[in-house]
Structure formats: C-alpha cells, structure tokens
Image (cartoon, rainbow, N blue to C red):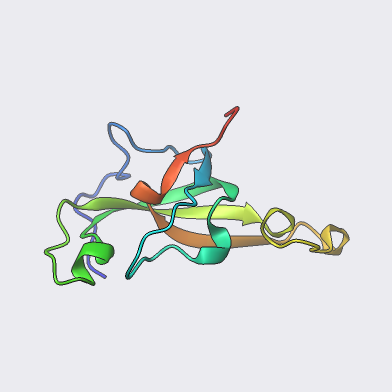
Amino acid sequence: MGRAVSGDSGVGEGGFRDGAAVRVKSHFQAGHVRTPFYIKGKTGWVERCYGEFRNPESLGHGGDGMPRVRLYLVGFHQKDVWDGYDAAAGNDKVFVDIFEHWLEPAAGA
C-alpha cells in the first residue's frame, strides 16, 4: 500500500489520538470502498495511526489518490459488532484498518 508520509505518529491537526472513541460512518458510497460493510455504523476506539497514504478509493477509480488520508487501526468489541454474539465467551475484539474519512468522533466521547 505504500509508506507513511512522515516518521511521526501521523496524528496532526484534525487527527484522532490513540484511544479516541470513534464511530464508522454508515453512508452508502458506490464503487470501490475499503471499509467493510459489517463495521459501518459501529463504535470502537483508535488503537493507532499508521500514517498518511494515497486514498485507495480514488486509486481504484483511476485517480491519483490525492490528497493523502490518515489510516487507523480501529478496535471493536465483537459483542458490539455482531448481533447475538455470545459475550460470555470472553472479551473478544476485532481490529480493522479504516481511513479517516470514514470515521467521526463517537457520540458522548
């Protein structure tokens, strides 16, 4: 996918900090998207920021992928993702790479 633009944490003005509560936007977007359908509308937390990369949603349609977009590793409790998930089975989590334009601050965070 490429290398991060800078050696820092990749979190600058407007970025999400590690541990920030975030919600994945649930809007429909036609064509190639990198956000899994099953995670749209779900709330999790930022585990870390990988840095900034060319936008694969633009690249997938022949664009140049600019401007670059921050990519985050976002964690979710599986009981919050899957209806009927047996939370008694433990504190299972799922982690997903999500680009910043698909994230918003979680309500009440």
